[in-house]
Image 1 (tube, rainbow, N blue to C red):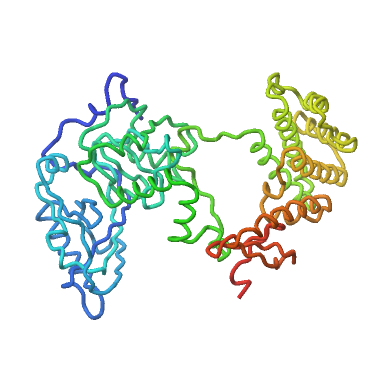
Image 2: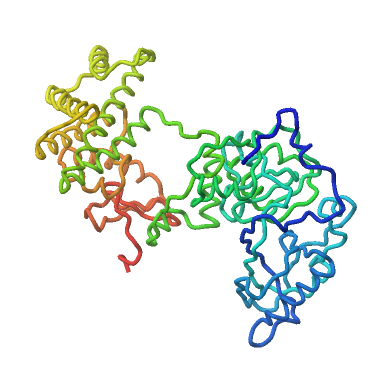
Length: 502
């Protein structure tokens, strides 16, 4: 059972008084952590690294001092085993700049319960760039520690990511910040923050709710959000490299201009378009926990229509071979049409949708504003609406070819109306492969040629842009916006994979 914190009990009270005993991790749920052990020169041999001897020394120091401060500021209290998925990387004997020795005073002793853990700064001249990684099993939270809030840049409109690339940093009842994605401690605050948590979670409960394969990942959970600005200025007892890097990245990406961010990405890392050109494929991932908790799904009429149209077109294309797909294509294409008509009415009349008019009323109000569909479009839309109603409310029966033709005409209407009335282009709303297949429809291709001609005219003014022939549609529409970016055909959506060009 998960108990809700009583309203009269502040989070600070749940932490308890500082103890001179170590904060225990035994009895908690074991989670894997990857740690890095930098290698002193004495353990380097001509054949590589004497792993066994190094592990023995690390464990000896840990045993004598009851703790081992790693190079990134993590505090190791669990002995390393030879079975902990060790990987040795020989990177030479150049000296490694270790973390400076951190003064270990009363506050540190009381919080961590460690009198004087070993710190690499004590022998800073001995360490090299060679290292060993170990995958140890250790609870992410102390035995009496729970999660009180997710750290999120709500005011900055940006997620707070750990350097493990997960936005799973939480604030705990031990007034510290911990990444529940990799187990790294980010920081320990000097004192607890005063706020009321909506509920507290154990590490296992967090995994159940937020891990991709968690057994409760589809259940609702009401968890507090702690804004980054509240911890940004808080006094810190202990910080790690994970905190410094995550904070630096957050401040840059959340508070820099789009131009500054674009320039920095080009200077330091490959643009995503380059990865696509190299043959990489985007893979969907689970949304960050803060996204799941704060209700971030917010779509307007046009965005709502875009999703419906994309699904409708995909089903229509599939229905050319699988008739049953028309059951999905018809209602989605009608929904997309209805939403775009409403979007245009809202542009013309702010109160035009206040009484939630049906499709026929929307058409009448648009006509009164001078926006009229053609007679054949109205006839086709009427048939599409009738079939949609039948599918939505009961049984339906329609001819395969008639349904395909109706869907085709609906897509042509969507393309014409969105471009002429809303300044939008269907080609920007669909996956590239679906769009390429739609270009076989003459009316769709005509609109595409107009849009692309305008885009090419605009890009020709930029000296960084390179335009060449597309290998798929054989038009001179393959655009590389910058030398450090990948190319894409702005007409058919083709992305040339590097191996195809070699």
